[in-house]
Image (cartoon, rainbow, N blue to C red; front, side, top):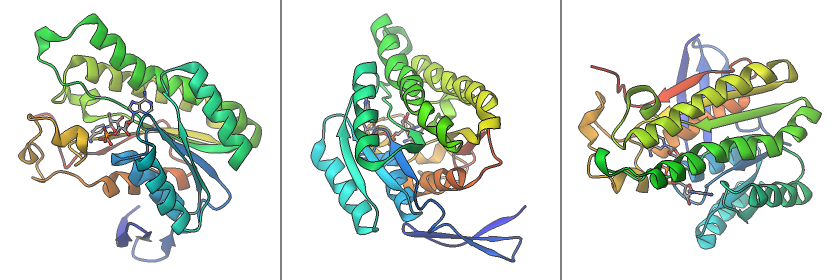
Length: 268
Ligand code: NAD
């Protein structure tokens, strides 16, 4: 099937399917409540706003910067949707549980989860310590398990759910950060495949997005990140990842997949 994007401002994506029926996603998610972890900035922020523009109410999880999260909530409310900013370290089970309970009491049952929160910690190979390994696996991978497990009962009860996990080109090719980061993002793919297979019959899809070199603080602070690494020759935009998240949130027949958003970066 050919999907040609005919109009994609941050507020509205219209896809034309095989040159015929235009598919407008602006109301697809009305009545759904989404949680996007680490969505005060970067990719998470763009995803939170894009889901709101597609109709969802959105819980904006943040770690430290409440002002950033409140700005995202304002954007969501300007789009006519409800929002709630909740501080929680998603690598700690007790904080996850409190966040999910508070969110569900205030906005309703969460049926759309984007596991986005992550850290990179670029390090030379011989300087990576056990502590770095534990920290990155805990924040990037264990957090996905904790938040997914906390939200699954609501999704299973409603027999509708979408889980979207932020992996990375690092899971596929190694990337520019290091083996600790690559392993955490490869673990995310295993998690995605297992949940997808176990939940497919319950109306819940589980997919991963594997971006590369998207222009956020994580990338602009890494001296090894150069736009010419990708064949396309530029950094990606956060909205280009958010478009894919909205597509996966709206689609009921894609599950267990990894969608790469990487400017054509492949093994050479
Ligand atoms: P970013 O650093 O701008 O944003 C990461 C967000 O996660 C921040 O808001 C941060 O506060 C939050 N966070 C970190 N630890 C947290 C915790 N314990 N609890 C709650 N929130 C926490 O980075 P980004 O580029 O927007 O990355 C978003 C996701 O996409 C990450 O998982 C990252 O690994 C992944 N990714 C990014 C790229 C890229 O090119 N930018 C490429 C591949 C994968």
